[in-house]
Length: 114
Length: 116
Image (cartoon, rainbow over all chains, first blue to last red; front, side):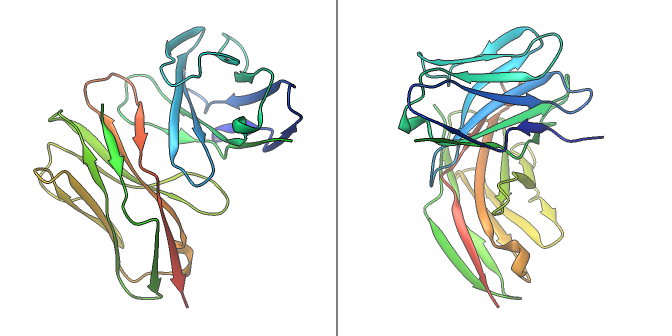
């Protein structure tokens, strides 16, 4: 049973480009969470999604950031017109329904904006 | 809003010795979960130990144990018989029991070095 798969592992983008980060949850997990880890900081909650629904996006920046979790395929975190301050590690975690703290984290995507 | 504080940015311990990492949190809730996560250089987030606030007994996982002081809102992690593989960032984290989903608040982390 594969764990949470995130790709790419490393992503380099120039300022103004778009970044697309992918997360495939564990088999049987229908809940996906995205976190951002800035250098020398802990993880900050961004968004919680279920299939085809955004449940809590209270940690998402108001502009340029969006997330989706379609019925088929991975969850996508999209950052448009990236800026240097977007450079960070982005983590995805998934959990099954109806279970308290069934988190499994992916290995993260390190985004570098040059 | 809940917050998690780790006042020790860096700690070091001699191999085979014991080290304690500190964590305090602020909440007005009575029911919640607390966690310690380990992040080695590989960046993978690994759950070390978990504590339910309604349980008075401190959680233990092999060489890892916690000292949970609910009234003081303190949740320290003790690592016994430290090994080189314990070197990592350690994050203390909080999850409210009010929400039906796992929205977790992380502290800023403590970097632990293990000296051979």
